[in-house]
Length: 287
Length: 171
Image (cartoon, rainbow over the protein chains, first blue to last red):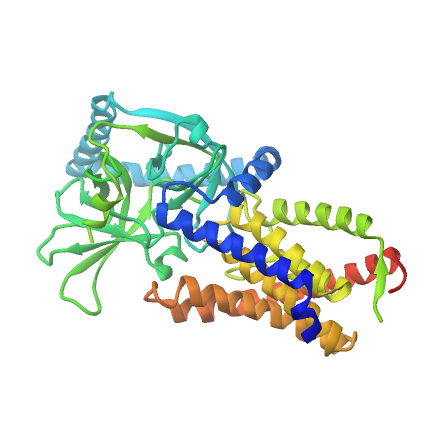
C-alpha cells in the first residue's frame, strides 16, 4: 500500500483534490459566484435536468388526469364541508372584513411595487438530502439573476438565491436556518424574525421568533416581510399555525406554514430588482 | 495480481451510470425518499467502482461524481468531491490490500461508506451550526445510512456483473 502513496497516480489524485479545495475556498472567500468546477458541471447537467423537470411536469399532469374521477368525488365532499365552513365565516363578519382587507392590502402592495423586475424560472433539480428543501432553478447570471435575489411564487415568498452560476442558480428556502428575514403580522403589526429550524422544516414549517409576550398574534394571521435587506416589504410568507413559548427565554414564537407550497412548486419568479434592494448584511442584522 | 479491464468501455458505462444517478437523485420531485431516509446513490456507485476497479478508478470517479453532486446539491463547498474521492480511494485500497471479495466485506464496505458520508455531512453542516444537530443524526442520518447502504449493495451486485464482462485478463 505504501508504494501506492508514492506513485504518480496518487500524486495526481491529491493534486486534483487540492485544486478543487483551493478553488472552492477562493470562491468562498470572494463570494457571489459559484466555483468554476460547479459552473462547468452545473452548465453541463442543466439541460439534462431541464429535460428531467419536463418529464416530472408531464408525470404530474398525467397523475392529475388519472385521478380525476376519484378526485371529483373527494372534491364534492370537500366542497360541502367548505360550504359549511364558509357559512360560518360569513356569520363572523369581523373576520371576513379582516381577511378582505388583507387581500386588498396584498393586492395594493403588488400594485404599488411597480419597481419590481421579475424573471420567470423553473425548478429543475431538488436536493433530497437537504432537509430545508433547497433546489436549483434553470436561470443564472446570463438571465440577469444575481446573488441574494428573492424568489417567490404567486402564493408567497419561497426563499433567496444562495448561489448563482451562468445558467442555473441554487435557492435557499424560508425553511432554512441560513435565512433570517424581518417579518410582521399583517393584522396586528407585531414584529419578529423568520428563521428556520430542523424540527419545523421536517413538517414543512418555519418559525417567527423574537415576538414579545404582549403580542396579539393569533392562529390564522398572515405574516409578511418587513422590508430592508434582500427582501422587499409586503411579500407574504405564510400563516400562523400556533403561538408557543420559547424554552430558554421568556419570549414567544409563532409556527408558520409557508404560503408557497415548497414541495410541489415548479414555476416561480425571481425578483431581480426592487427599489431599496439591500444586501445580506442587512438581513444578518435581523438576528 | 490485478484483473485488467477494458478501460474505455468502463469509462462509458460509468459515465452513463453517473448521469442516470444524477437525474434520479436530483429529480425535481424526490423519487426515492422514504420518510426522512434519503439514499445518496453516488456513495454506492463510488463504492462499487472502487471495489471492482481499484483505488485510482475509485478516487477518479469519486471526484467526478462529487463535482456533479456539488453542482446540483445545496451544499456550497466541495463537500461531495472530497468525501466521495476519499471513499473511493479508501475502499479501493482496502479491497486491493486488506479485504477479500466476499459478501461480508462488501456489506461492511457498503455500510461503512454510507456511514462515513453521513457522519461527515453531520460533522460539517450540523454540529457547529445547528442547534438540533443530534436530531439530524438520529432522525435523518441513521435511516439514510441504512437506505444508502442497501443501494450500495445493489450497485456492487450490478458492478460484479459488469466487471466480469469488461475483464480482459490479468495485469
